[in-house]
Image (cartoon, rainbow, N blue to C red; front, side):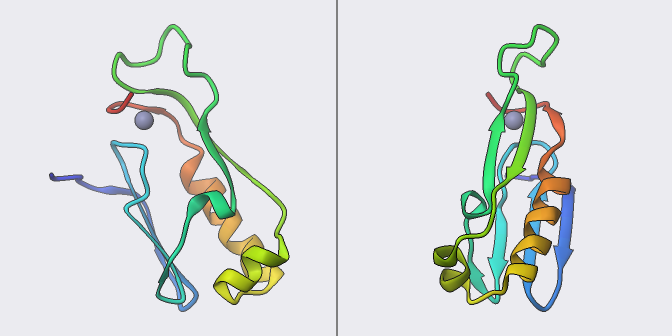
Length: 104
Ligand SMILES: [Zn+2]
């Protein structure tokens, strides 16, 4: 499947995140080379799944809401609170994009 451009593509020494433009998934998200889960950093949901003007096959308003760091998640990835907050804010910027045109 050709997923086209990424809506978010960011790589640092700490993490690597690529989020496709057309579907609400995050095909690449690693921290220090280890597979990471978005849900460890917050809730990513369609907060308006029933809005009337949303695309027929799409999401109404995809929004990422960061949650505070827990020791469990910091230990899981071996990161500091500052690093956690940095990643959570990148996810918030990249994953709170509202409409999506292609999934349901
Ligand atoms: Zn979607």
